[in-house]
View 1 (spheres, rainbow, N blue to C red):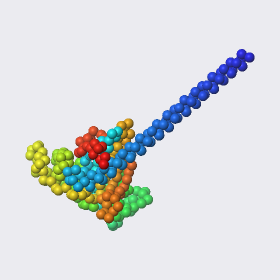
View 2 (tube, rainbow, N blue to C red; view 1 turned 90 degrees about the vertical axis):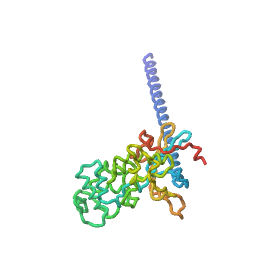
View 3 (cartoon, rainbow, N blue to C red; view 1 turned 120 degrees about the vertical axis):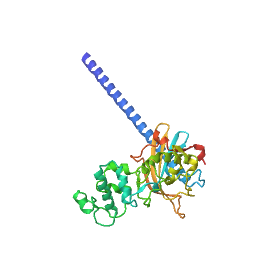
Length: 332
């Protein structure tokens, strides 16, 4: 009889242990589910706030007040809400190197700075030229249909202008690492053989032929100061003449007039940061709509949380901050 009692006690203990484990597992699962739901909610909230940054950017691009209009030269703007912050950066496609319009010298100079062996740099430039030209003639060290076939590829050059910068990844010799380096320096939307230097970022200015590298940092400093003070961007071509020794004279810098409205293609990058640390960012290519269009801007491309996008909340980005706004300024 005592053995049966002992067995029953052990059985009860095993059942209680099992129930305890099941209860703990259930509680853990519920906590995880709650965390996932909470995280999804916060991510959705952050994305909505990031999208609001795009709406504000479009508004400020059309501001009739030249002193308040936002710049498209990579300048950074910040919106401070009660429990979140949004940072917005704008890039004019005219301030990048156009894959279809840039000449061989400009492309070669660009590739000189790319993380690629010198011999491969020239081959890549010539393969790029072969891709975009209309003929089947092979550039020296270039690549046409036969070269792609020999490389075991199932496609051949389009022999027409690039339709997107992503198409560059198909060019023989292009690697993911090199493309990532090129991505923020190139465009297919400018349509101009030359870069608008007043719109170019430091990364672009550093790879352009004929640019005095010693003046780039000084020029960008003055350009940012001018943006902060509501002054037109200085012209890089005449910037050197405005310097006296190492002293920068912003008031003496010849400046081009700011246009009444922004035109052309513009890339807008926004990032929202919530109080709990949740973030979301979007990268959108927009174009000024025609006068008959239903909207002020037409979205040409939309990317939510692009993996390659650097955060706008790093210390090095603080130097690009031009203006900071409180929530009441955009509450109406």
